[in-house]
Amino acid sequence: MKLGIEGRRALIAGSSSGVGAGIAAMLAGEGVEVLVHGRSTKNAEAVVEGIRASGGRASALIGALDVPREVDRLAAEALATGPIDILINSAGATVSARSWFDVPMESWQRQYQFSTLYAVQLIRAVVPSMRERSWGRVLNISSGAAFKPMAVHPEYSAAKLALHTLACSLSRELGDCGVTVNTLISGLVMTANTQALMRGAAQVHGFTETGEALERRVLRELWHSTMPLARAGKVEEVAAAACFLVSAHAAYITGTSLRIDGGGAGYVN
Ligand SMILES: NC(=O)c1ccc[n+]([C@@H]2O[C@H](COP(=O)([O-])OP(=O)(O)OC[C@H]3O[C@@H](n4cnc5c(N)ncnc54)[C@H](OP(=O)(O)O)[C@@H]3O)[C@@H](O)[C@H]2O)c1
Picture 1 (spheres, rainbow, N blue to C red):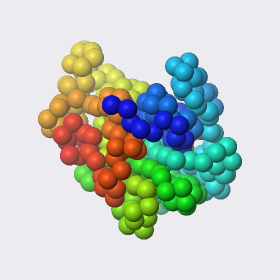
Picture 2 (picture 1 turned 120 degrees about the vertical axis):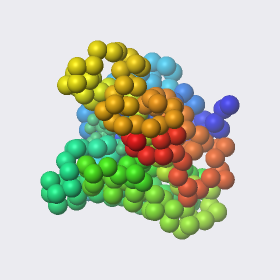
Picture 3 (picture 1 turned 90 degrees about the vertical axis):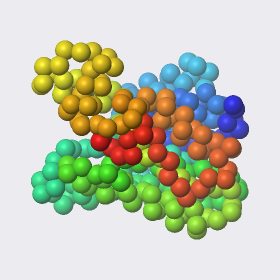
C-alpha cells in the first residue's frame, strides 16, 4: 500500500539512530524528503547517506533538544529550507535508571525539556504553517512507561505521559483543518542500545544463549515480562506504525494514542 505522502517533507527529531532512524528510512522510501536530526553529525550523516544510497532524499540537522534556544534555532533552520508537512518527535530516550529519591530536581527539569518541551517548541514553530496549508501530521513517540511506570526513572515516565495530553488538546485546538496529532506508545524495541543492555544483563547473570533465545530469557527472567509476544519489537515494526499514522490514509485519526508493544500494555511487564 502506498502511503500517499510522496513529495511531503518531514522533520524527525531524534532520527540519527534507533526508532527515529528507522522511521526516516521508511518515510524516505515512500518518497518523503526527510530531515534527519541528532546531536552527532557522524550518526546523522550515516543515516542520510544510507537513505541517499537507496535513492531517497535526506539532509542532516544537528543540534541539542535539551537546550531551549537550540531547539528554536533547529526549527528555524529546518523551516528555512522549505515547509515541514510531517513532524515526528522521536527523541527522548531514558537517560538513567535511578530510583525515585536519587533523581535530582535538575534531572526532572532536563527530562521534561528533552522529552516534552522540545516537542512543544517544534509544534509551535511548524504547525501554524501546516494549518495554513491545510495539511499536516504531528506524531509523538512515547513509551509504555508513561502508563505503566517502573520505580526507576520516574522523570522519564512522567515527561512521556505529558506528550499524550498535549497531543490530545492540540488536536482539539486544530479541529478539522487537515492537521492530525497523535502519539505512538512504544514498548521495548530492539535498538542498538537495547541490544547492549540485554548483552550486559546476560553477562552479569552468566546466560549463554544468543539471539532470540537470549532475548526471551532476559525478558522473562530478569525483566519479568508477561508480554504475549514475548520479544522486543523490531525497529521496522514501530516505524511501520509511525509511517501509517503520518500517512494520507490516517486522515481520520487524531488526538489518539496507538500501542505498539507486543501486547505488553506497558514497558516491560
Ligand atoms: N528503544 C526502546 O526500547 C524504547 C521503548 C519505549 C519508548 N521508546 C521511545 O522511542 C524513542 C526513540 O528511542 P530510541 O531507543 O530509538 O533512542 P536512541 O536510539 O537512543 O535514539 C535517540 C535519538 O535522539 C537523539 N538525542 C538523544 N539525546 C538528545 C539530545 N539531548 N538532544 C538532541 N537529540 C538527542 C539521538 O541523537 P544523537 O545520538 O545523535 O544525539 C538519537 O537520534 C524515544 O522517544 C524513546 O523514549 C524507545
